[in-house]
Amino acid sequence: MQPEPRPKRHYWLVAILILVVLVGLGVYTFMLLKPEFEVSIDYPSTLTQGQRGELKVTVRNKGDKAGSYELEVGIDDNVWRVKVWVPAGSENVLKYPIVATAVGPLKVRAGDKVGQIWVNPALPPTPPGGMMTMVGAVGTPVSWQSLENLSGSGKAPEKR
Image (cartoon, rainbow, N blue to C red; front, side, top):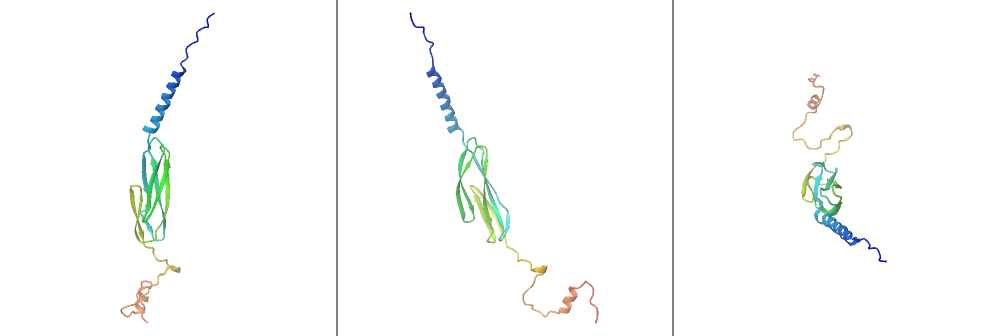
């Protein structure tokens, strides 16, 4: 009695097909999909001396693959280098505090984006009662009576 012939099994063919598909997906994922980063900044246009503000840096990944982006952020002479991980189709927002200490322009930058904040001088505080005191010298004699008449009710002074 002869043994019955076994059906031919092509396991090796199935294994090769699975291997080709996996290699193809790997090449597609690692070679064709890429992150595409975009940087934007948001900051106040003016601050008053002593006032606090905030520099917001948004790193957006418009690509099809997650990735990290090396970013350089600067506020005047202070510079930070950060590596930001951003998933595909998402964004990360970084916030940096600003304290306006000197009057004049304050430069801000992130990546290739550059901006300027104008710092205005702080006004002196108003004394209690809301009145300002003036200090200085007067070059000509002052008639205090005429000043009282000017600051009165607007009527002509009465004769005495």
